[in-house]
Length: 496
Image 1 (spheres, rainbow, N blue to C red):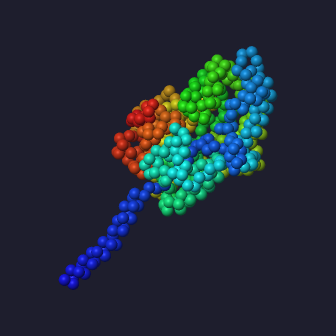
Image 2 (cartoon, rainbow, N blue to C red):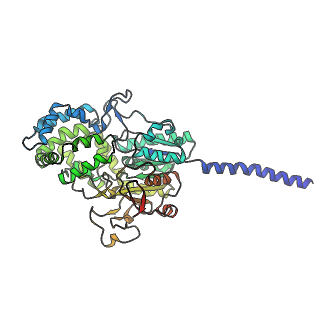
Image 3 (cartoon, rainbow, N blue to C red):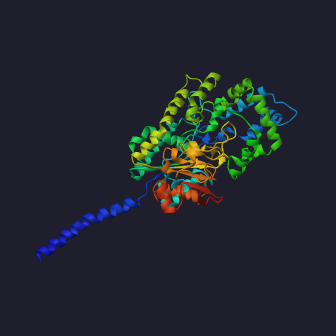
């Protein structure tokens, strides 16, 4: 009897020790890893005084009403779009430069904000306290945050609101502060980062400096800009305005934003009509772009007061074009080598060069990585690279970190057109990507215009929340969707 009692006691004691562990394991499995979402260019509102918050800086400094209310700008702009009159470019450039100076969107010569301008809300608490964020737009990163919240709850989702003008490395330091805060708040050892567009460039700087902490479980990168964008070649004077390309682009953009903030600008331009727009573009090409003196004047008097000291726009120059572009800008007097701005962009250029290596390093160290690159649309129609495949903003070859991509309207040939990593339409060869088994290509979705509850947004949310491993093979096995996908208007996906 005594032996039985002792045996029973041992069993009970063992159960008492094991059951809490089982409960803890079950709880650990159920407890979601917190997610931080990162917006792209223009994703946070800017204020002339971020502590006041009453004077918002117009999106990218472009306020159609204010510009039309400036007599000098209006009168000379009208001449630009007429057959019979020639603008007084001195007057027009001076007025535009004065207008942009007044917006305070530009940084100072050291690549820092003017005065106290910037973003008001560097939130450190979850989106359950900021539910308006989840529905503030029916596209872009708020849609992703909402889709992810449907799976793990808004209390486990955080938004990194940053000044998108800033040097990527400075933004990465602010992101680090948020990561540390979220880990402490949630008692989680790791976080997941979901970044769109320019947010991917911030992540590139974050990886470079903080990868050894190994506290990011997953990096989900959607049409990321870490390798730059070919339209930034315009700063190296690869700039042209072909009406046959620009007019369709403007019309497309007017419709694409579906009454979003940027639609007003495109609507105002397209309202001029194709003929007048064509006249204006022809004049810009002839009188400014093909006239070296006028072109220099335009850059120094209009572009520099507008965005000339903002680090972001330099850091979006593709790595291979950076040195030659910067040299052109220095020689023109647009960029000063003795400023803090110059030091910042040179530093990030080095970071950009290490990105491919860093990307492989975080994956090797245990982080999951998923890269989503869209294609099927021509690039921005302002440089010689307008026939690159893109998502209408970012070139597919850069977003995918190295895919071999045919020119728009063409197909790959020879060795590039063969193999498991080649799309059926023979446009993409993913074999040359940095991470070919972790990179997906979606045809038919414009940049960040993902729809809530569309299959594409659901796919990203599944990857971000660990519903499936972040590799092509695992996703295909579970959801029957491969590496190359095509989206219809409702953003249903089918294999392509």
